[in-house]
Amino acid sequence: MKKVVLLVLILFSSCTDASISKMGGYGDEFSVELINCDGSVVYKWVSSGKVISEKDSDGYYFKDKKTGKLIEVTGTLIITKL
Image 1 (cartoon, rainbow, N blue to C red):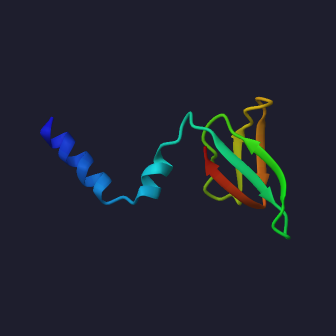
Image 2 (image 1 turned 90 degrees about the vertical axis):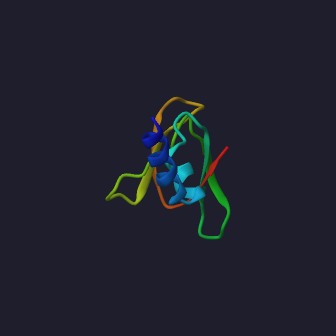
């Protein structure tokens, strides 16, 4: 048991706060804002879980809390954990 705890401490001590937060987030809500070229918000969603980007993709996908639908979006985005 002590070896497992030590291993976890070593793994997390080498991670930044941002990377630790990125590993979590399942079940958390996120605000996703699509930004226009002039900096104004074109559209805003709230996810019902984590916002995910696939490895070779320039977009993100998530489940919209309001409609329950899968949203796939690309562009200039601001993603904030609520």
